[in-house]
Image 1 (tube, rainbow over the protein chains, first blue to last red):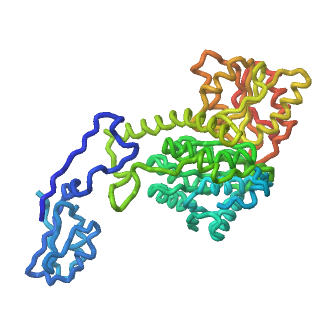
Image 2: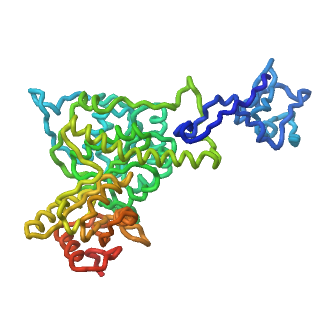
Length: 97
Length: 396
């Protein structure tokens, strides 16, 4: 996965501030994964690639690569819905360091 | 829309007799509103029914959205305005109260939605008659407020409001009295759309919702910048004052009619000035004429624009007055009439402090007749000490 860098847009005064709260950069600069307290880890030994975690992830942070689910930790906020929904209990929840 | 019905055979201006509600609808039509999300409520229903009919008949090229509530109506209006469509809606009383959250949103998102509000008293008890508490409860949202007195003024204000709103990026509310104005029919000149096109350029939005240029809108903003965004709204409100004056002058050049932020009537040498809004001002004008004939130096100041409040105009006109009385068809419980508070507070930081009397009259649509206004004038003349709230005609 390509690592994205945070691009910071700085405002100095009201003059260069847009009239509304609008994100000027693309969301690919705003990595919300830093909000996470707990982290889901996929145990690929137990995983049968059913895709249920991919379907349930509310932030679309699980994508399918070569037929297997992969978690995008730059955006995963650690809601653990994937672990709850996994029928084979293949997703483990670990504390974020 | 086609000009059919509004032009005579020689192409001259044709007067049409329409009701106040239809003046709102035709105002949206000639302004080429593109999206109209609306929910019907007495006494606003005719605004919506005419617009939905005109959309269905393809007379008006707009998307009419049937919604399940006023909250949704305003939410849909915000969505449409955010993608760059000129948007109109209308409501009344409880409907406006339900829209309240979304009005804040339209202001914060800086979207120039124009809405009509028919002043109806708030329930309970259920009532359908006029009172200004519904629209004045939106005072602090940041929506521009215009209080109309005649059918022609309603239609003209819709066009003007779109122009001003789209310059300052704030929503506008056009307010008219239930039944007294909404269901009264008068002659009205519905201007040619081509003429309106010249006056009202197409709506352009700098930061619009566009899938080709994705942005997050209204996201979490820290105290570092939220404060500045509020400051920008206030700057826009201040700018709106000038924009209304400018748009009004241009309106006069294009259509031959002008209204201003306030409308003074025989105020120049007046010792006592009556301040009123909406249709009460029309009745008060008759009373002023009658008292003038008797030699009493009475004038009338009608406040047409309530937000932004015309402080400069009010100060200038009240400067020479010896006494002022404000007639409020509304009340802020625990204090006094709302127009009264606004007038009084705009005078406080000026050098002139005429005694200002506050009167509560006509709540829940009770008639404010010339006799009621005469009683108010007499009370003001015969008392020296001003009072904050004087209830006229209450059955004690």
